Image (cartoon, rainbow, N blue to C red; front, top):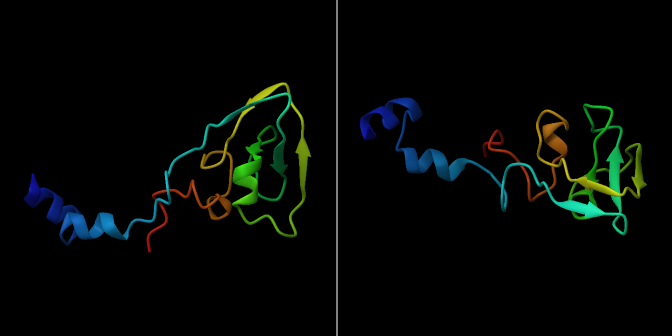
Length: 102
């Protein structure tokens, strides 16, 4: 198996994995909120009509100069890190994807 991994990565697999920038947790956030929480929608970054990110992900992302709004909803979950809903380059620092290689 190790020989196959060396062939796939063209170097030691540990070296390749060390180059991947997956932030603190990687993947999608999924944090949930209730009607007392604030969520954000960024029309500049979003790839779908109905999407939202939690306040923490919004503050840890780069939305300066973007067209965004905050909202109060009864329930919801954060879509930050979901490559089907957001442009990859604007994910917050906690939910960058494994697609970003340093």
